[in-house]
Image (cartoon, rainbow, N blue to C red; front, side, top):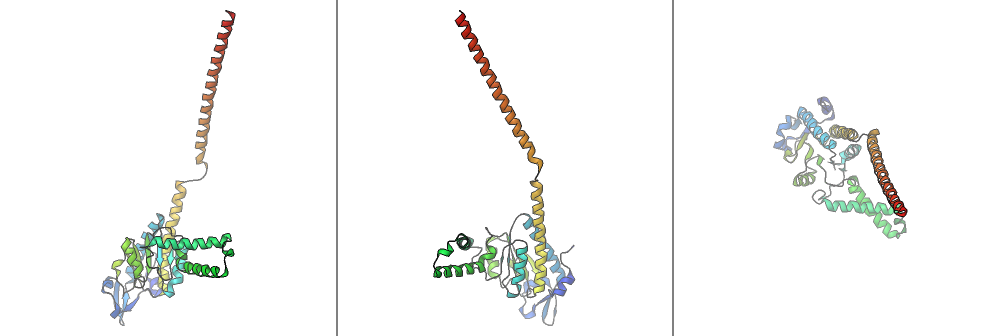
Length: 284
């Protein structure tokens, strides 16, 4: 069964494309018709593409991989942040930091700097600084938190990118392509799908449509995470399975005790033999 229905997408306005004069010919396979100089997206293909992308995202989550969500358009910042945070995935909703993927070690240094400032505040070092130093550090911390706070837990490069509005996030897509990172993308009729691995044709200016697609993807990710937890529990069940090891340990200690007793008995026999030999020598 499909994760989204045709009617849901239709009600959200996902079928509205851009003006025909602004279209990209590469999007022709995903266009249903033209009406009033506006292209209409084929929602049947949108439903199929959402299911395909959701299945891939689910498998990635089940394997413990991270997907970085990118959406810096003003009207979609809040839903992108909320949906990504709900499944514990990193996201970027402010300006994309140039070189975030291709120069990832430098970005990690900035994140560590942010963590060190937080540590200063918690251990009392910050209180001992002068007023001017406090002001400078506070401003620096706020800037880092705004731009990098959402990726603070991302210790390594993401396994995939999920992008809303391909034209606006072209720098992020270019970096991902350079590093061979797969890209999911919600794409409108004015964009080029050739740089995407998983195309989701949809109206990227409609907040409702974007939320609908994001909810389907994040639901699939949540299912993958739950399956991963279930597999981990089945591989490492808690309870009484450690008991045989304890018994084995007791057996080992018992065997060790037997060897010690045997050695003691042999030593006693040797001492008795020596005493008997000494007594015989005295009698002679």
